Length: 255
Ligand code: SAH
Image (cartoon, rainbow, N blue to C red; front, side, top):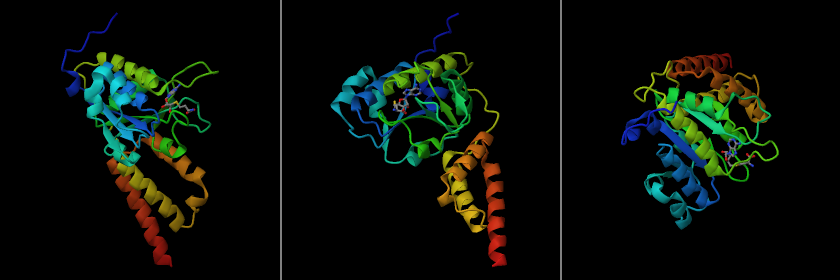
């Protein structure tokens, strides 16, 4: 059965407007324009460009075609922190199945998860560089990874076509929702609160003499994954930071 079409004008006010498409370090401006077009076709409008190599550009404008409004409204920023400020869920796209064990979803399941969490705030979908994808530090910011199943001998899609596939799954899922918004079961803490906690955790680990996290990126990566799986809310973060502060305080009292 074909799902019902959304009425014109309804998308801007819908949960789709809470989805940020974040393109990181894009090399070819044509891909930025083509991504904007793919987004508009699929009812998405919030484009973030983190340090694009060449932008603005006539090629981006030409490839955007009828989606010049998405391109004109794109936020150009120079750090991922800026693009993720306020986001309650971050998903990273990856052409390769990574060696690190990370919650890895299909585009369909990822779309369902993003739309569910978007009821509680903005959510982000990260796309990497044409040549090297997303760095490990960028993946560290993601609660989930998504991989588009493809020919194992050539699984790397063009950037804008990856945006198209994820956009299609988001829009298809959106059409099955009644009223556009679903109530989140849980209000996850925003990205900047999580980063504040991870910074505090790293310092506390050093202060209490457990380890020097700078010597071991694997330790912090494991801990990040643990807490990303738990999806802590703001109260959880406050409790955890209170415990860390107490542990740090006791240590300094012993000195
Ligand atoms: N050589 C890079 C490929 C980058 S392709 C790598 O191995 O990671 C550029 C971007 O398009 C990727 O960072 C990702 O955001 C998206 N992409 C391409 N193919 C994909 C796939 N099969 N699944 C999910 N995302 C994909």
